[in-house]
Image 1 (cartoon, rainbow, N blue to C red):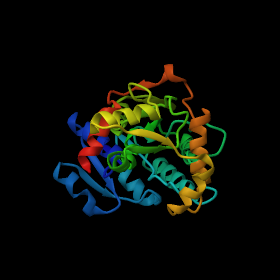
Image 2: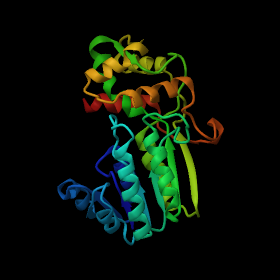
Image 3: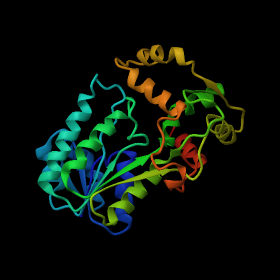
Length: 287
């Protein structure tokens, strides 16, 4: 049996779907039992737990052959990342008590970076989970292609999409959540000892210009990309309601300057199957 956290989201749902398709038993770990009803109908066992509560997580992980762990995204963390520290402490305590056969933790590209950014949350959690003594894989995917969901409306309405990534012709490592979930499920089926890192990106790297060109193809009309001025980032993010935008700003700087990258380099990454056009087409269909 495999316990899956974040199952109501894109990645966790993809992990569960892959495991179920392979005939594996799945325990859906949810905060609210009502949100697990769909998975229960599909034959999953339901465990109610909070990612910040070690005792509930221990029960959810108990007896599991493998566990998929992901922390809820925090885009506006408090200074010092107390949210990530709380997750790290709770998950470590739960894993040490439950002792599942193996663990896949959804981390991020650049988790090894020394400079602080929004992704430092995963750096902290990785460091804590290394000490559990349970076989663990840190799955480090690139930029989520689904992040372009924010650009669907402006692409269709104005024919212009903003970009915080630059230069506009620079290609960045990106990946679809479907690929992340599939690979995570594959990793859970494997056996290993100790700690390992698996870095994942899509079949091709993608530039902001590529994104605009793909939008143009899908819409049948011109779409161009416009650079969001760096000096206005903080102001823009605060206008969106953020109180601590610096980590997000630093993350974008890290991607643009290249210090947020894969530890093993492009040659050492696993490659996904889902292309950008497939993801953007699905995003349009959901609108």
